[in-house]
Amino acid sequence: MPNLLLTYKCNRSCPYCFAQERQKAQNPDGDMFLSWPNLVTVVNYIVEDKQDAVPLLGGEPTLHPEFVDIYRYITARNLIVKMFSNGCMSHEKIEALLKVVDPDRSRFIINVNEERDRQSFETKMQAEFFRELGMVSGLSFNLFRPDPEMDFLLDLIGEYQLRPRIRLGLAHPIAGEPNSFLRPADYPDIAARVADFARRANQRDVFLSLDCGFTLCDFTDEQLGILTRAGAALKFNCGPIIDIGPDLSTWACFPLSSLQPQPLEEYPSLKALKAFYGTYINQETEKRRFAGVYKKCATCRHLKRKQCSGGCRSYAFEEKS
Ligand code: SF4
Image 1 (cartoon, rainbow, N blue to C red):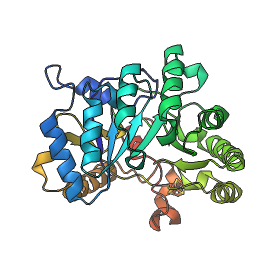
Image 2 (image 1 turned 135 degrees about the horizontal axis):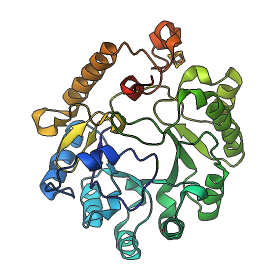
Image 3 (image 1 turned 180 degrees about the horizontal axis):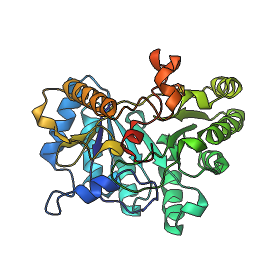
Image 4 (image 1 turned 135 degrees about the vertical axis):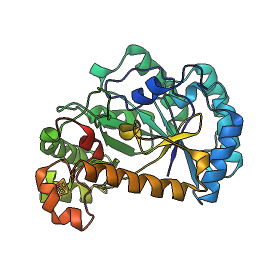
């Protein structure tokens, strides 16, 4: 399902930020915010693709001056608003959104950082967001340190009665741009921490889902068992997600956003665009003789059987890989 960026602007500056390459690449005279005609165009593509949700992203999507009207438009077209936000939304906008929010058509995934990576304004604004909109909000957390502390996520869910879901994302390198990310050498320890955390999440009836780029062999059978018993959504793949910018330029995903962006309207459908990126990224990684983040990926039976794609392909463009 493609993500639609309402703006490149953000009110945080996270060390792992995936969007910084796009923010810098943006034409300074270009559109900072998605226009109404472009919104309608993207929603039409999504409807033609028979998707039931419009994933909104940024920067920080709620910074769009017409965010609430955009929300109303999408829900009026009988689609779900799946919003990836940091929850740092002004009091006025929260009030305006509360007047129109449709719980059946709202899935907000709020990205929070640990206290050591958070500024005081984030804590304050997120607390208000959770108090008012917690019933439609789950959490997202990015793993970019080798020693993440995640239990505060369970406390937040309990305190604000949030949806009992946490998406765990691995911070990957962004081709051509420095950012904070986890190296494969850290993956076995991270797998152990994620499994431990899943055990505690399970005790509190909270479900985890792993985002793209996790590597299957870094989890032991016991850890996979713990995750499975906890009902975690597991996937070990890396494929074009497709992000669509405010100016309708598209790219495969944020870590690969510097590679040959394509104008959306040159493609008749999202399916055709996804097919382009699938082939193109395969060619580029093959050119670099990249089979996965480890040498052993080249002969791995899990790769052949498509159970694991060998981690994030952005490592193919890393000099160190
Ligand atoms: S493809 Fe690579 S990362 Fe995935 S399980 Fe095989 S060796 Fe591990």
